[in-house]
Length: 469
Image 1: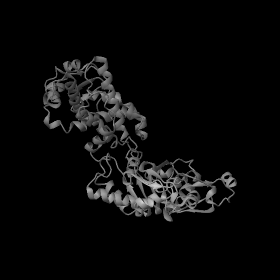
Image 2 (image 1 turned 60 degrees about the horizontal axis):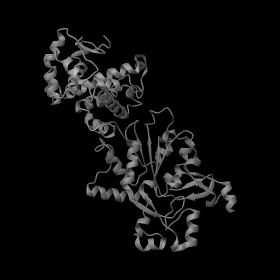
Image 3 (image 1 turned 30 degrees about the horizontal axis):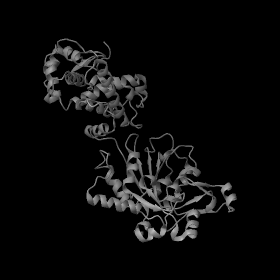
Image 4 (image 1 turned 135 degrees about the vertical axis):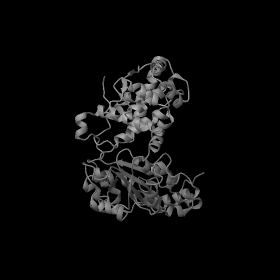
């Protein structure tokens, strides 16, 4: 039975825990995790050797910190993962700012102790309620974050405006004894950023110019896009100076890292029989990598990991739609990726050259290039010389967007294509053979061994693939 009053708490709870700051608490729990070898940030991939060491150092140093990075780099998820470094629950007085039972800050908490003493009630605050997050917007005010003096409250209680009884607390004081996160810090107006100076340096807040001081126990963490990339605003220099650590995030460095994230986040569990073959998933992931290298795409804006996640979900949906229509097993194919282009076109910020070409055409070219990159991992092990030679003789192949058996039958006249597909799929199931055969064709087209039209494949032309027949 957990203590329910202050007296019971003093007898049964280690009081040294109540004397710790939230940063000390996180530091101790982090050290315990490191000693046990526990995973520090489950579900975060690709940061093990880059971001995580800097983050661990910042926590050990008890720093307030900021994560700087482009969109879709798991910055918010990293901040929310800090909850795991807090105690499962802590005791507090039942006040607005969850006062420490031994050292209350609010007038309400002090009055409660003065009136009830050891009989003062205790509530237990779980870790997830100790994390407060605010998305910064230009209309955010100082009162929203810090608080304001409430004249009505002062009149009712007969206090002065400079008394704690007259204060209406903002988000930051309500995060007392916890973590306060601000997403997109640069979007805050400069005067609001200035209001954070005191809490970062002196550890207290002042409200509305009145001599109201609250020495809060808050761990402040922030995210932002690199300020030289954003047109919306910037972080004022004195605020940057008061933030202990600036940690840069990044996109996945390898296709394997990116694919691990995408497979973890994408909703593909539609039916037990739905299958996204590894080579199709690799092609999907490579689209984002190709976009991050394309000069027609605005790289300062970034290409979010959500491109791959949303694209894979639409690929799975198209496989599901086809399976329902033709009564076969839902297996994703490379040509399904072209049905997923709505997940790509809306997420790309284009340069002037890209605007002239158009988002859809660029997305199609990125898909073809992506399959060329993904095919590189399989090229040496697949016998494709006969396939290329057949196309070089001037032959054309048209694939139907229909049942798998019809697709495999259409591939039959191409020497070596079905054999290469069988080698890749490791199966004779028509659905897998169709997917593998399409991957071979898309891969060869992406590597410019053959040319690809909207519906046909033909001999390589020695130039960029031609769209349309």
